[in-house]
Length: 219
Image (tube, one colour):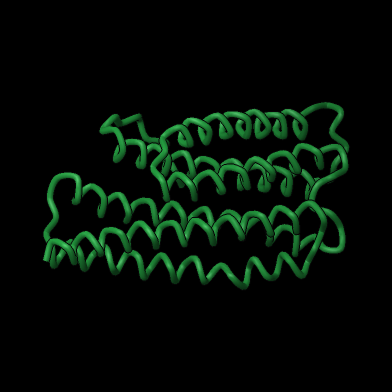
């Protein structure tokens, strides 16, 4: 029975990695669609979001079955409970990527944001993709150095997020009302995507070291 239990715990980890890989593909395509006004790629992201949702449901059901059958304790219990919380954050990251793609689809054939903000959003997208890729490796290896890198990248995204608000609220902003709304929403989606990754990184760090850091509030 112990061997079966360990196999089930390994499956939980494998499924988390698989979901994270789906999130990488989603955010990579979403940011490309956003920056290049690629409506077909945006629609692909939107259509494929259900794959992340379905994978999350399967993982959650597996975790609940383990809790019911195996009644894990100590670190094994933390692994399963953490998996449930991580899967929820991964699902929200997929939603953020979908929202970014939806903005690209709504504004096609135009680009979502004015030229003055495009380099900022290109960098935010690059950082989000990098964060998602590091998250896959963190979930696979529990190398906590990656958790620190994710937090550093999130700090950079936070600064870019602030710069977007400074731009659209500044006296030199010439965008229309719809430009202001789109830029604000897009910046928020990028920023929340990274925040969820940081939340996951903190949970993995706790599992690996027993050292708990204060949790970010996520929506």
